[in-house]
Image (cartoon, each protein chain N blue to C red):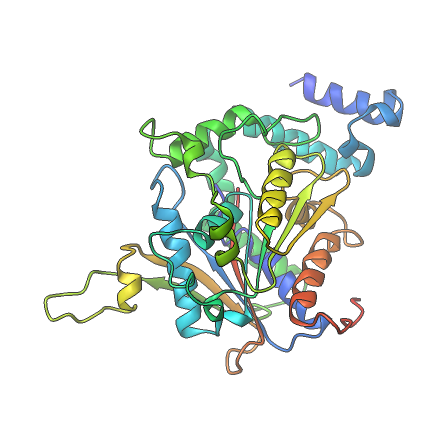
Length: 241
Length: 132
């Protein structure tokens, strides 16, 4: 349902937060992928990879790029990182991004791990309809298209500073996200996992749009900290106003 | 029409705070109301309706209005739409726009690029894939 244009305010606010933290010139590229059901798998993953190649060839070296996403976008990022059929990055750490930041990723498209909660606005039953649409109807099990791999694949696909998962403690995807993060950590990758108490799906994004001026930046500030720590692990960032 | 407001008023004002959902306990009345409406919409309305709300035609003018009322006549950064068609190489082997590796993907690339200073190299790049 979403679009990059809806996220412009969130991303530009994040850009300014990164500037305030100490970065000189942050650049953002928001991918506008084709929504289901206008296109199905693997179109969206191919578009995600095309965006990565565009940035790598025209904007900056991989070591300066953080790949990020929320919800289905985070799923695309994970799927792009571990794709086996076309990935120029697997054979060289120099070609890998700096960090992957996944906000409430949809890690298991169809799974008993996804559980409706009293707090979250997502609904497992509706999600399964979207998952099947992404899979292209009934031709394949949507769960086969969830980002998954063996230890070797996660290890060789890992960004240089690993993965950061940020999720709401009360969201439908919470158990699946925790399972995925632990799976990747057990594969030998660096993984951080931030659970937002009382939070729901994509809470840093939702909070930005709904909360008052005092609280709306809290989620963004956590993301800013993650990016800062990835690039300056031994240096404190400037205090954010 | 009745259940949503009734549940909201009950959870916010009529029962012990500890008995309401962990989310409700931590957010404002407005946030709680909006999320309950979104929850209802997600479960009952088709995605084609939600797409209108999030689309460029609605989101972009609304954001320009929010910038304007905050005193920004233009964008607070350089912003550029990227539209790149990726084709297979033609009979001469000439590649259009992207490299040989990318043409295998056979997709178009669309996106929005934002940077504070487009005349200076970035020191950090965020590649973002939206959700919803």
